[in-house]
Length: 281
Image (cartoon, rainbow, N blue to C red):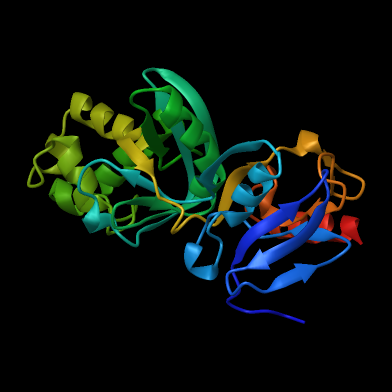
């Protein structure tokens, strides 16, 4: 029997064994064994409201603090003009002061208020930890990780040489996505109407530094409403990994995201759900 829209009101536990559960409509359900597979707190509209943590904690289990994971980040400042801009083959690093904390290479995308995409999602859990630990952390984008400073300088000089008398604002079309160019020009401090053959070495060096370390301040992570998964959950030390059985409650099992286990993007978290459920069987 499948019961829809039937919130659990109470779990009746006697001598470390669940006797029954009582639903909101006062219906009582008796069984030999019980499984908590309620998911995390991400996308609460789907029903994942964190009830499983409350059930487990009330039954004596330790809960590692649930946090949003595999989620986009919110940046300080106005980046609305970059919304929808996809970046490929870029390197993104997270810094506190001058110390690099983590970096990742691949694809990302600008959102209305921040950034998302595979490399951001994969770093989001670590970013969450750093936001808790440090007062102010920065995100730096290397738009041309395959080119070191000198090679990028040679590339820009070659482009400028071909364009010769063109304005700076019209000189970056071969180097950068169109949507990014106005943002880079503004940040560079170079007069948009300046002829490329008049740009100084100092200005060019500043432009290269900008393209190799395009900097934003991170405000926060997106919340549970948009997070793909939840990190944290029921402490794995209190679970038998052979069959996912509780070490505290005799007839209780756990499966899926309610547990303190999560992985990167790419199907790993779905695999956790399937594997833990299979272990119960």
